[in-house]
Length: 266
Image (cartoon, rainbow, N blue to C red; front, top):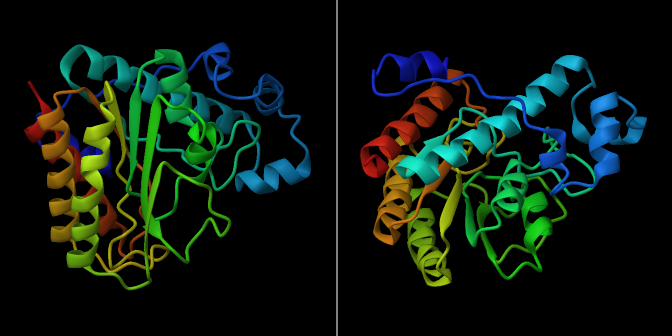
């Protein structure tokens, strides 16, 4: 639905995501975990933690998701920004997957780049896997704004975590984001990865925040103005969204990508 809506805008070129090379994934993840997932030999507990039943289709989908972020990263380095209608799999840890995230596409991309990077995670759920990957890496800054009482219930430590109570509305959320973004600027990354989840919408069935579509637009404006001012490439990934009706999620995601193109295109 999102691809169809964005296609109608007539400003994007859509390219099928390449399958990521397992050796590239193993730059970030435990090679034994990578092999076990690809071969379908994960134990039952590991599969339950993923949230998906294992299948060859899941393998293709996962390699395509990581491959899409790697391709978007190359596009960003060439043109200033790149996007993927997947990715943002921020609950995957080095040695296991969780929360519907098999491999962490941010970690794989950054490990393959070996560049000073910042990850801005505005999904309503903390990017716990991403935080764990980079907690002790001085060349990666992780910023996560998320619900205090939502999944994951055992939080990790990002470079900067900003939490919100259930029911938080636009004004306090945007104030907190405005206060946090200068820390990314001060860090001085050479590339920014944006996990642009829209599950903070009031209509979202899992998010617990009460953000409006207009509030999410202001959120994206703050983000893209900051990235534009920094003059660094940006990679935009999808992230979560579970609204009822689902069309609200589609509209919010489309708004993000259209605004990214307006703000970041050369």
